[in-house]
Amino acid sequence: MLTPQENERLTRVGKGTPMGELQRRYWHPVAATEDLEKTFTKRVRLLGEDLVLYRDRSGKYGLIAEFCPHRHASFVNGIPDVDGIRCSYHGWKFDGAGQCTEQPNEPEGSTFKDKVKIAGYPVEEMGGMLFAYLGPLPAPLLPRWDGFENPRAIRTVGWCYIPCNWLQVMENSLDPVHTEWQHGKYQEFWEEQRGSKYAISRKHLKIDFAEFEHGMYKRRLLAGASEESDDWKVGHPVLFPDILAVGSGGGKLWKMQTYQMRMPIDDENTLHFWYTSYDAPEGLDVPDKLRNRIPSYEVRYNDDHGDPIRDNIDAQDVMAWISQGRIYDRSDEMLGTTDRGIILFRKMLEREMKKVEAGQDPINTFRDPNAPAPEFQLERDKAHFTDGFENLQYRQYARWSPFFRELCDLFAAYNEKRLRDALPSFALEHGAASTGE
Ligand code: FES
Ligand SMILES: [Fe+2]
Image 1 (cartoon, rainbow, N blue to C red):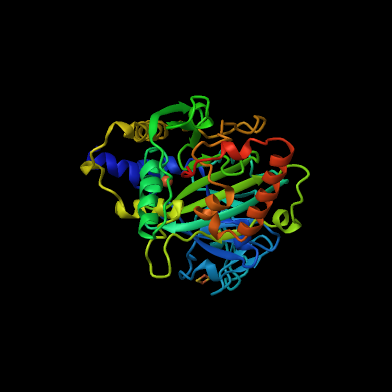
Image 2 (image 1 turned 135 degrees about the horizontal axis):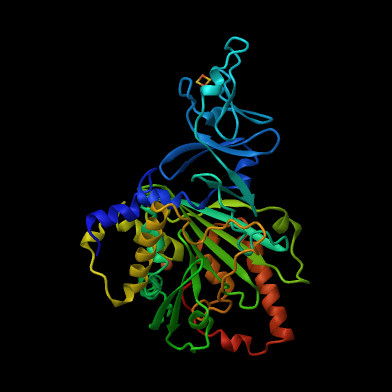
C-alpha cells in the first residue's frame, strides 16, 4: 500500500514531475518505421506532450511539438522539406531540433525566425522501430538490445493503445502468479462455458526476484517443473523501467525474443508494443517477404462488440489492467506475500527518481559508444509455454500479425524436421498445455 502522494509520484509522467523526469532519461518507442513509409507525419503523444513525428525528404526523422507557434496549425498536416518540415498554413519551416529556419513571408533579412523555437527531440531507428528521447541533452545512447538488428531474424511490431496508466502495465510484469489465474483458471473457466476442457493452470511453487544492472529478473518454479528449468534458473527480465523481455515459446529449439515495451502516453494512457524477433535457423527456407518487411500491426484486445477477447493471453492482461481504473488507487490495495516483486520494483523506481533529482543518470542508461551491446539472460525453454506454437501464438498478440500463418507453417516445418533428425523424444517432452509469460 502506498500513500496517495507516493502513488502520485510513481504514476504522473508530465514534464517536471519526478516520474516524468525519470522517464525522460530513457529512449521510448514511438512508432514502427513502417508507419512512416506511406505517410510523412504521425501524431505522437508521449509523456503528456503532443508531438508530431515526421520523415523529411532526405529520409531523416524528427519529432517536434505538434502545434506551430505562429497560429497553432498542426504539423501533422505539414509539408516535408529536405531538412525539416514546413507548416502547411503559412510555410514556416522547422528543423528536427524545433528551430524555425524560414518564414517565407517575413521581410528579407528578418531575424524573427531566430527567436522562434519549439520542442524538438532526437529520433533514432533500430530494427524497424523509431525511438525518441525527450530528456536533457546530451542524450544517452539508444541501447541495442539483442534481436533488433539481426538481419536473419523475422521481425514484427504489434501495438495497441491501452486506456490506463503505464505502471499498471509494468507491475503486471513483476507479478508472476497472475499467469496461474488470469491466463490459467480464468481461461479454463471460459473454456468450460464454451463446452470444452482445457487444463492449463500450473501452480507456482516458488517465485523469486533479483535486481541486476539493467533491471530485475523474475523467476518461477511451476508444479511439475524441475529446479533446472529455464523459468527458475534463468527467468525473464524487466529492462528498467518500461520493457519486459520474454524468451522462446512453443518453438523450443528456435530462438525468439519478444520485447513488450510500454510507452507512457500520459498519466492515463499507454501505448504497448510487442516487438518480436524470430531468429530463423540456418537452412530453413524462409520466404523473402518475411525478411524484407518488418510489419506494423494493431493488436486487438476487444471484439467487435467492445467485449474483451477472453481466450487471448494478452487481451486477458489488458482486460485486467483496464479494470483497475485509469490510475489505480494504491492507497487502497492489500498486497500479499506474492506481491514482493511489485514492492521491489516500486522501491527501485523511487530510488532512481531520487538519483535523477540529484542530477545523476539512472540505471540502464548508456553513454559509452565503445561499450558492447547490453546483455541479459533470457529463458529459451519455458516449462509453461508448451502447447504448440500455433495454439500458443493464436492465444497471444501474434494472432493479429500479418505473418501469423507463415510463422506457424515455418515452426511446424522446423520442429518436424528436428523431431525426425535429432529429438525423437520431443513430443513426449511436450505433454502439458499452459500459459505464456
Ligand atoms: S500557423 Fe504555421 S505558419 Fe502559420
Ligand atoms: Fe499476463
